[in-house]
Length: 38
Image (cartoon, rainbow, N blue to C red; front, side, top):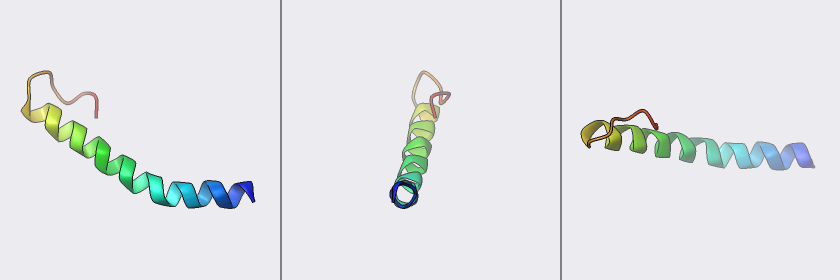
């Protein structure tokens, strides 16, 4: 059961985290401070 929960959570969270990381990278790239955080 624990494996199924982890797999389901990963399926939903991974794309969201990737999009958020890309957002931070692009935002930092165009604003002062750089995009290293992404």
